[in-house]
Image 1 (cartoon, rainbow, N blue to C red):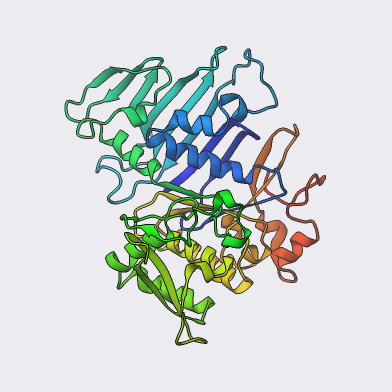
Image 2: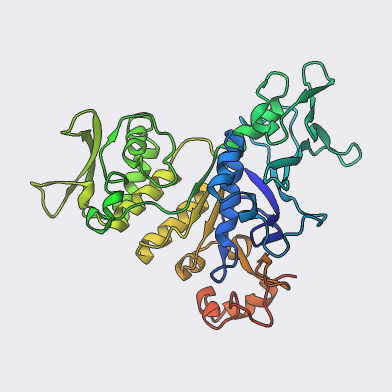
Length: 419
């Protein structure tokens, strides 16, 4: 699980820190263009970097100059690097026995005048007792990486290209287990920017060949992908590999919100070689329906359930406005499921939904208000201050306080949040 993320000079996030609450989801609220989705973008970048696709991930974002904070593009600035620092809480089965303290990974990079991305800093350290200070297991200096060899107890020096990451390049887990552990943890961050659940009639013809509703070739899918294209194979994995646990829970939570669905049926597609999703409706017992006939809300909810009930060990799952197509009752259930998943996995959620706010068990732990501060090109994420809201909440819900402009009104003169 993640404990903290510190981002500098990434789009509007000039210098922001989120201390991630343990056992509670992080719920980001705020006006449009306040940086909420950018946090999820950075998490996705970390995942891509750990999986060996750092350069490709930057290109998908338009290159370095598209993500570097627009407030100052001068190459003479001392803080011209984009920097991301993430702390990881040790967890059984994830980190080696010696890594008992918080594990910190730092990454800084910039672009040269020829637009070549250069890694300027990449470190990994483990927190220990205060008297001994942190244990540095990886430190980078230009094209050289110094690594603590756990077998010999000495520091090894490896050469590396200026635009390559040591995190994905150092593969000798026997000698450098902490590097492998950090790579595994960050590589299993899952970000869901929105599932492509439009019905066929609403799609552009160029989109007709993709989507969660369509039959899919059968491959093992422990974790549904970011756009939900492999929903059917993810459901098949749960049904076959976790039939008495996750599959039962998924169907129970589906039926609670969609009681007309009598059963989910995964079957071979008539076209051959693929798996299709069908279902029985209690209102029409003699008819078998297919995923193409499901509502957008139903398919979206199924995708969310597949993500939340996946047994795949995941350091963090993040959802961008997951409530968009859901009834308030389904949103209440979704909040409960996210809070339950947050007991074992870091959960990020961006939202404008009042229903999510009003159903949080511990809003002061979960909610972070994203807003502009000082220079209009910068934003911050601040927690709600319970001392300012406790009296108000005896009379009003959080959504009512929000409606009275006490929480996240754009460009307000004063805010009731911690400084």
